[in-house]
Length: 52
Image 1 (cartoon, rainbow, N blue to C red):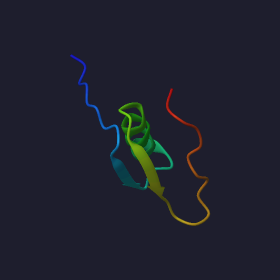
Image 2: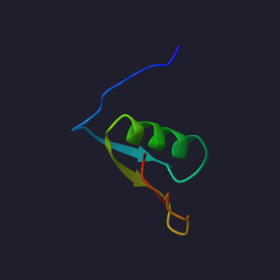
Image 3: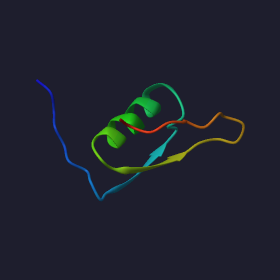
């Protein structure tokens, strides 16, 4: 069963969102329509791309 959430107009901060579980969470929020800000440690490549 798929969970459908509309987060249009919401802003989400994902800490540790550049890879692994955090990146998956950030992508899921983007797909739900949220504006996503990603906090990451210096020296870590930033998550790139946008949700379809």
